[in-house]
Image (cartoon, rainbow, N blue to C red; front, side, top):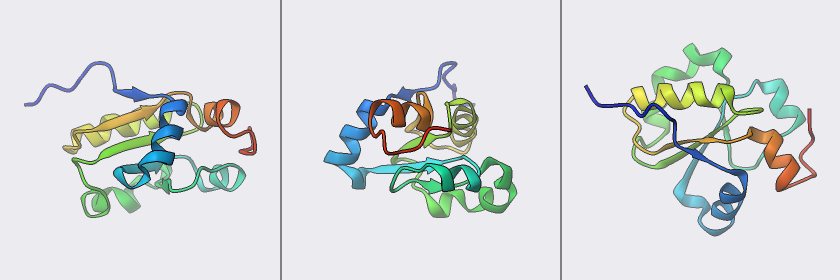
Length: 117
């Protein structure tokens, strides 16, 4: 059984913004917030996979995403995305990162037009 790291790999919003500007096609971006949260605030190119709808999308995860591509997961503050990262690692994804501070940090530090909630 493979060793799963006890500490999840993370990335910060500054690094995400740089990567999205420089090489957006190399990233897989997943937002695990609820649809009503995405309506309030969102970041372009993130695919919304709400944790509450896990049964609806979990069976297709390998068809929708490349398990070896860099995958960044976002939520509001970073807790739900951490859960998703752990699950993805358990599904054989090898390059998963939790977005530290979530969309809240993105709004505060990168793009103030993204609403806080």
